[in-house]
Image (cartoon, rainbow, N blue to C red; front, top):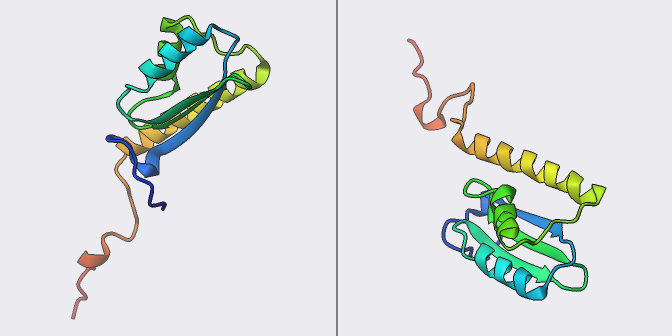
Length: 123
């Protein structure tokens, strides 16, 4: 575990980092979208690299998912790249986000029980 402090609502255990390539868009609309994404509860960080047109997002996958980020991008008419690699990553990100969210809801199990409550031996 690192000693980095995260924003409110972000657990390091469920923290994921996503990189989405964006289509060329006006810098003003991308800046507004990034500012709006930055306000989402459960988001740890967001940045946009203008040279490579890549949006970098880190968030708690139990609180939000890649679809939440894409909704904000659509609101500002910023499109995600239509290349096969970005499309493949989007599908993978959705799968992992759903898996993390479902695992967080599931009650942990073990066949050994609680160590502090070991069964008593019969005499």
